[in-house]
Length: 433
Image 1 (cartoon, rainbow, N blue to C red):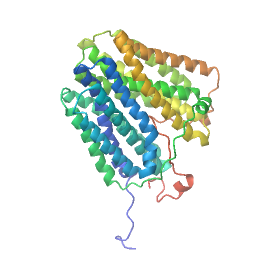
Image 2 (image 1 turned 30 degrees about the horizontal axis):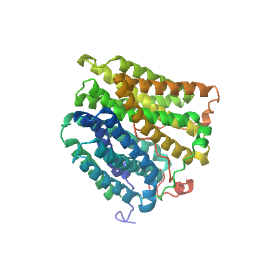
Image 3 (image 1 turned 135 degrees about the horizontal axis):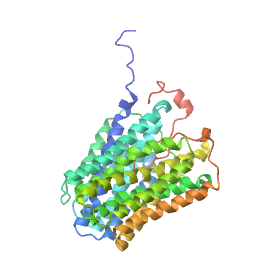
Image 4 (image 1 turned 135 degrees about the vertical axis):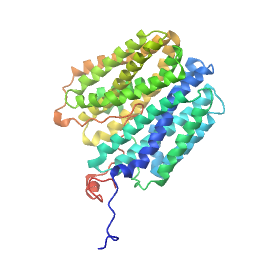
């Protein structure tokens, strides 16, 4: 066989998935940007806090719808067509936001934005899970989640360079949605089979792992409330938009730094002890922020940033370690059902949390917001303590390996994973197909 006839070696697994990873990193930039821009912009034009909270909650409602309906879109049209449709819808919703700045119109459009972003995230993750061989899956998914988290932080920081009073942020958001179409349209990555339907069984999953289920709800309430209502705290204490953007970016930075070591620790000791420590840490960090009072002098702002980073890393760790704890107790046949139920419970907590926290902020001021965080974290810590008296930790051999996930974007169940036989028949061992 001549050199010209020899088969070309497959490119690196990272190269093969680069287009999909890049597309979602662009979406993350827009998502991180809007998490800060929406509450700050609405506050600047005089929208009352409760209405701002309703808009934040509307985005979470869209996320819940994305969790429920994106699988149907993929089954109907395939991964590429579903992804590009959602990207187009996201672009249109971003452009429409520039027409009128009001709670009602923005609420409706933010539902659309939450639906599109979450649907695209679910499609991308299930796609990567399905086409990546097991020997590479952990590293490929780590690249995906780290890229997404960096995108969230980049979007938050981008707001410090934009005019909040104008439409620059909305044009950037629309551009991110549109730009994500290019790598998906050009990808040669194989499309997997259509995913299974999401199965939600609350009673069964609670019986398998009470801490896993409740932890998902608590984490959704903490994480989405901080991303959505947290910027209102910054405006209430007189911070500039650029400073509020730094606070949001600090949450993502803390997530990157803290989540991995806590996850590794949970692989070595009882995960419930790590979950308990993280919950207590969130409660203490909430008290620390409340102690800053209704204003933060410039000299103390960097201290506030550090506390926000710690809070973000601990709060996001609650979800990831709780999910790992649930999978430790689940049988192989229950993994999809457990993951699907936990996902929906997370989205439900993400929907209810901002609504409750907004009322607390309006009634009690900035202290009310941190009282909400303190109460939720402390109650969950008490629940974990109680559960430790009811069940022993699983054997080390039954514990799954911890994986970290980005803030505000929980892991999606592997709805169409490759079977062992399919993996053995892959074109090249340890390479994505």
